[in-house]
Picture 1 (cartoon, rainbow, N blue to C red):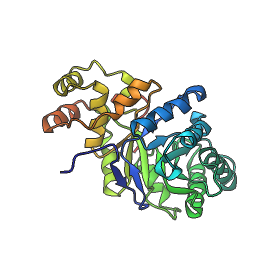
Picture 2 (cartoon, rainbow, N blue to C red):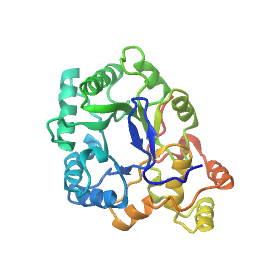
Picture 3 (cartoon, helix red, strand yellow):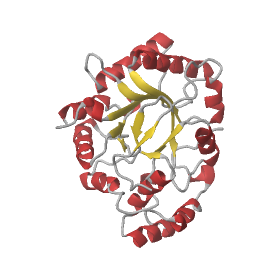
Picture 4 (cartoon, helix red, strand yellow):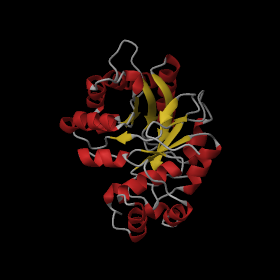
Length: 283
């Protein structure tokens, strides 16, 4: 088996590759976001995940423009729409605005556009949001499209009208304490790539005895174990930090590997929905 590297990618159903290790910018304030993204890019990340709700899309785009030696096509950019407008056309325009913030070029695009949450006012709003994303995808303004926090019922609902199905990605909370086995199995069955947000559990589990034991065994930090765990599960982790040293450390997860014993111990921490710190999906 080839040695894993930070350059590893997965192939989405859209046929586009996605770097398996991503960098999250949730709650990264504008005055820090550009520098954090530049630090991440220097550390080897080639995948940045933002959202309209995070209010830092423009800063992410600026970081990519400022980055030396990297072209736009070298960086995979994701954003999300959370709050729907009153029509598919208005949703589309709102999404185009995000694309322009992230890539102001004449042929600007994002690599992945997601519906941020199914909790956006009901089925009709979810339909309008998905149709807006499909239009972006058709026009090349979004290379791939997907969802976030969607359970099985929400993804199945898209079948009724979607021209693009299944969604290329589902981004959900994932870590050893909330493994969301039902939706993960569903996504794997249907070829939906699984992104893991909160993979570090916001540092609330750093002193967990099982996690600490695995980290000590490999001479790494608990957070490095958690990132590597997601990679071993075939997920796309999105660790977030505005601390330069932690950004670099969270990317330095390719000098060790978790063995079967490690994975079994970490898998044994699952608490189901109770283990989520943000939300478990509704299936």
